Length: 326
Image 1 (tube, rainbow, N blue to C red):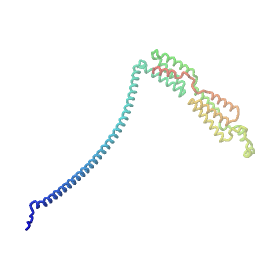
Image 2: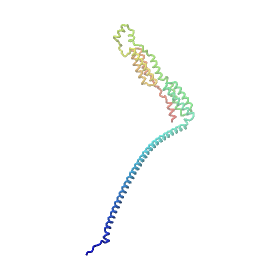
Image 3: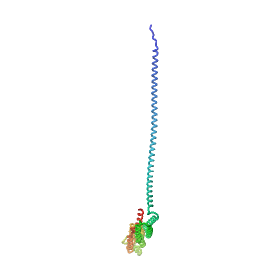
Image 4: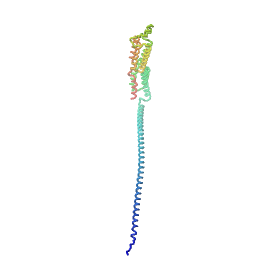
């Protein structure tokens, strides 16, 4: 009879060991998977945090860049304002320098012995009198007033005891002699001659002989003149009333323009107005001794000068100013 084998303790423990091995392996796999999942989650969170931090840093950098741009723009504006302020200050410094130069000049003039006290006042008075005399002669054609002003200036200079004014006194004496030798202002002479010419003009109603004869003709001749018109050979003469009135008005206008040119001492405009006046004279009256006399007067008027023939006029004033300035 055979003996049956009985399981030993080793055989009974082997399946338990195998089960434990697989259990530990499964636990190890689970632990490894959990660790891997945890590491992946950690990396994702770190990446998300890094991205958020990067975005914050970019936003901060953009804010700082915008602030720097504003600061640069502000600095540019302040630099422009500073440049404008510097220009204003430079102009003010130049003005201060000019005022300082003027003050130095005034102080130097005040320190000059020739400009102190009564002598300076007398020189100022003489300069004013010479200026008044010259202007009265040039602008107002007041020869007597100019002579009186120059005489007063000579009296003022005679009251100054200074040997440096000897040449000025001699120049003033020569200028006064030239003024005394002047008989009348050419402007007054031309004005008087022009007024005499205007008074000698016939009236606008003084018609030519042909027109007078036509008005005094018999009635049948006046009727025929409505059909047949006979004119003189010289057709430049105005015969109708309107033409004569217009020509006479034009002549008076030219005489007025000539008077205005005399006041300005404008010889070119003066002679042009006289030439036009002669044209209207020929237009108004035919050739006659009276018209020839008027033409002769116009020629005399055309040759009348308007400017003052005084080469020494103003020489005393110029010498006084140059001497005081020197």
